[in-house]
Amino acid sequence: MAVRTIEVRERVMARNNEIAADVRSRLGGHGVTAINLVSSPGSGKTTLLERTLGALGEEMDIAVITGDVQTQNDADRLSAHTPRVVSAVVTNGACHLDALQVFTAIDEIDLDRTQLLFIENVGNLVCPASWDLGEKEMIVLFAVTEGEDKPLKYPKMFQNARRVVMTKIDLLPHVPFDMDRAVANALSINPELKVFRVSALTGQGLAQWFDFLRSSVLPVSTSG
Image 1 (cartoon, rainbow, N blue to C red):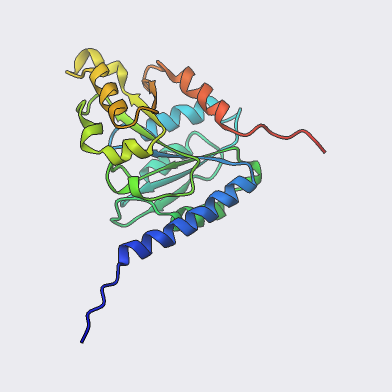
Image 2 (image 1 turned 180 degrees about the vertical axis):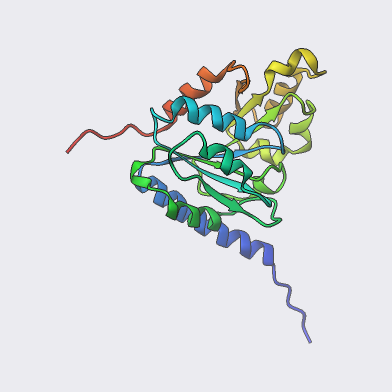
């Protein structure tokens, strides 16, 4: 009897991409810019979001979806910096968010009063690189406490990202990290990457990050 091989992963990915297209269409219909934040665990995604909500929360309509393997600790931290509900997705062991989880989470978000949606992905530089969530762009955080060769070890993440945020730069005097080499490694994987250098602790570089976020949202229509 003949053996039939079923490519389960390909089917799952195809279905994910279909849902991601629905997410993108739905967000686009409301003029929402979605940013997928990815990084290794501990690179500073939540801290950067805390500072961003604190600085821009009253100026811009920002919503947040967080992904964690087991807890909703990140969502709890961020909820202290915004009056809006922070949607927490607990993956129960899965190493990434998928489009269906995002599609479900945005049901809890008032998209008519949202300009910018942050999706804080699970801390992992492998799995999230392959999963379209319907975002406008993926941004990877890269802490100076990591090795300069991180882009070479995880090239797909840096290939798919459009920007890199070098984080924790206040620690540069205290760690053996070569910033120029790290950036060169990232650009060798993806020459189109735009690079930010920030410290969410001291505030260094955050002005440039905030200016980028302001420019990334669609202008609010005053017609009618």
